[in-house]
Length: 147
Ligand SMILES: [Cu+2]
Image 1: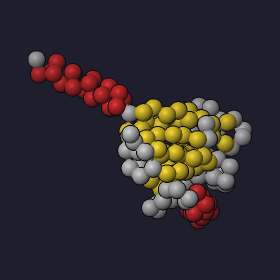
Image 2: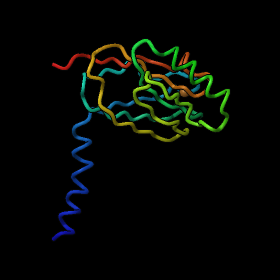
Image 3: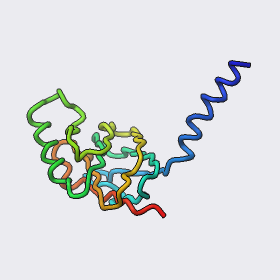
Image 4: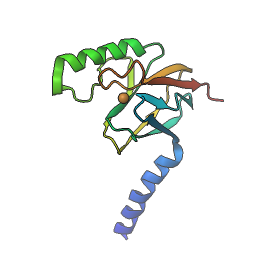
């Protein structure tokens, strides 16, 4: 009996978590160093599950950052890439502008990131900070007011 209950809970947990989250699918454009789509829209405060399907031939990561911070975060990542070699292989700057980050996803793999969207509406940004890519590989993470 106890085993059956445990089994029930272990099955229900992930199902409940998935049911509550808005699923967002993101891909790179092959050889183009760009994301598709380039605009992602969520409601303020909602649970989000971002799935990144890396159909490209090189690794990419995904960072969700505060409005207007693309350049600052990108430049910090460039510095990481130059200064630390393999010490920071995820190229994710530790700074307040980075709200959520998915580590680099290898070619042919999928990455998942679960988080709660910002409570404040606005045009946030998402970028890939693998070396030299953020200038092209970016998009708008649009947070609209919850009804
Ligand atoms: Cu990339």
